[in-house]
Length: 127
Image (cartoon, rainbow, N blue to C red; front, side, top):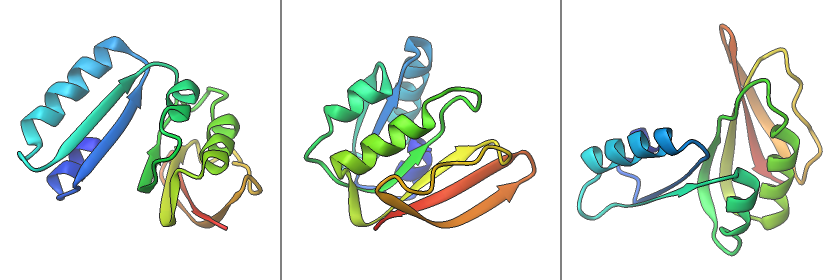
């Protein structure tokens, strides 16, 4: 998604990825598509720890795509709300198994939901 954002003209992209191999591939892809005026940062490690390092920053679009069977949804969504890293007019898109109910009261509110076959995407806004 970061590469897509860069191709579509995002000024900056920040990503968090745990896997060293995936980080290497992401970094290479972003370097291939980024223009000289675009900035990108890739943080490697645990998402909950790396999110804390982003405190004080605000993002207009956050895309969260954890392993579907993991237990990251609630802690990460709550942390995003607590740290207020989603801009007041921003949107958070969460990819998930459409059969998995996501939390509704986390300091953010669901504004819409989409289902694409076996993929669900729930969108949150600050409330």
